[in-house]
Length: 417
Image 1 (cartoon, helix red, strand yellow):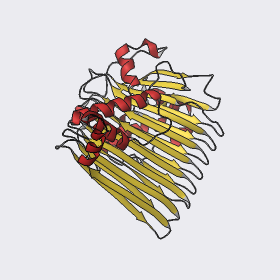
Image 2 (cartoon, helix red, strand yellow):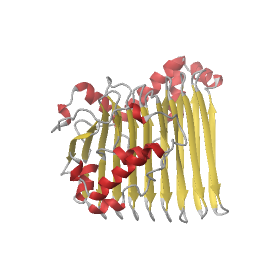
Image 3 (spheres, rainbow, N blue to C red):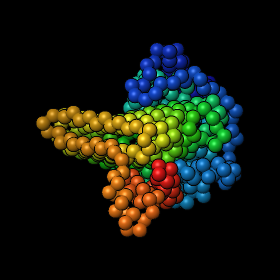
Image 4 (tube, rainbow, N blue to C red):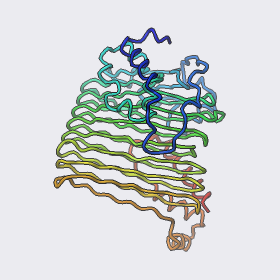
């Protein structure tokens, strides 16, 4: 795919961004690292006609992040390997007319009006990671749901890293026109042989009047992966946005702070489940800005923290008009060397009703003793407590993911004994 195929505005934007990249500032939160340590150019991958063409180990990695290989109860599938879209399929019997699913690069070439949406929700120079996406993005998924279209089954997208010492840089868009509805499941995972990889992404989501978007993101990284998924959301009047995020693996570092801006009578919910392991440095959170009256929002985070991992949970609710919001951050520490911090922040006027709960602690001996007195082993008791703690009852998760969560909880609990 040659740059000359892109529109002039896009080529000029890329050129300008690359010239200014050295001026970009580090992210406010999370560990800093050099993006220059990673290669951006690598081998290309051939397109496939069916996900079954992938090797069984690759299929298993994809399944661990919620992807359905046989695509049952999926309205479409997208696979990006490194920086190349190798599979894109819409299930015509399940995906109604009025839904456009494309590789982002192809969408930019196809729709001149996309210029008006490009880095309009996320500031392009928010930090060096967004600036890097602006300068070097390749591929990504573009989803446009036209007015009144209701998509019953989720779309699924997988961002798969294959090459060691490589950075994946997708730019994703979801544009939901008035009264539309969609659920996107994204799974991000590297190959088991992929070393020292990075995933730097920008995802811009526009939920128009009375539309509803559910965005489920599931991550299963390697222990030397650096991950920076930047997500920005704008929800117009009467719209609904629901975010589900699940991290199941050790990771070198991850920093994410999705931010939603809400108009009148709109709603946003962020659900986060974290399994913090090994030497992971994890800095996650979310922010909701209540710009319209009667807007509502909720941020809920649960984390199991063990080994030598370090976790920072952040949340921000800000409203100057009549609005309601609740923020909840809870961490359960399962190892003596693990560390967790919570940073809840509320700011509002007299008409704003904003609340928060934050708690970090360990399993109490009386809880263990009670369950063990009922015949459970210590392992079983720890697993039961951990499972009850981490469970957010997130609707719409694939059955395979719920099963995987149970397995991860049990393994995590046993490891903490």
